[in-house]
Length: 171
Image 1 (tube, one colour):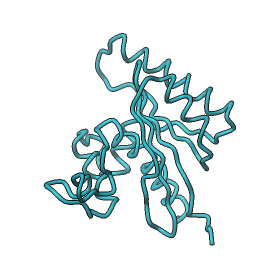
Image 2 (cartoon, helix red, strand yellow; image 1 turned 90 degrees about the vertical axis):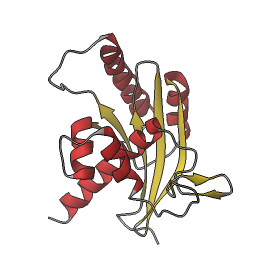
Image 3 (cartoon, helix red, strand yellow; image 1 turned 60 degrees about the vertical axis):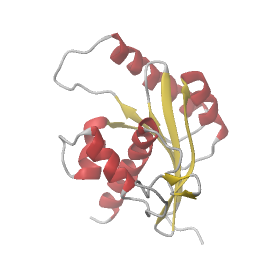
Image 4 (tube, helix red, strand yellow; image 1 turned 45 degrees about the horizontal axis):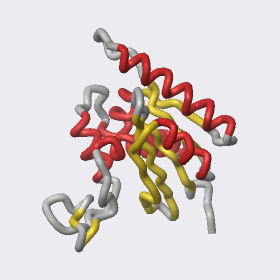
């Protein structure tokens, strides 16, 4: 039986030319990675169109208090591109700023990328073999087997939105 807390989310970690997409499901409190992809933005857009999800969350570029280069502006364009694709595909779409992702997952607005990615891993059961049981090895795969840093960032976007919603519901 599906409850209000059971859903499928798509997280997007946008980049200037390549981006990451992760599809997660939460069912009866358990989180599962259903699909993931790192590739050209056009391929990510096609993947967005192929999924039916309760919500699509895109990491939004925000001011980080330092100078930025052209790739940051190109990433801003990608955020808008994915947002338009998602809306046209009738996805409920949200934007979530990177510092908020870190704050929600680690409790710190100054969390490093490594700390955020470790917090993402810890939301899953470490069932794999090898030195990283979250990812595992080919013969004993973990729940995040085959993921890269970009994919972990996309998972983090989806998880942060989910956990922020849980906080609102529990108030």
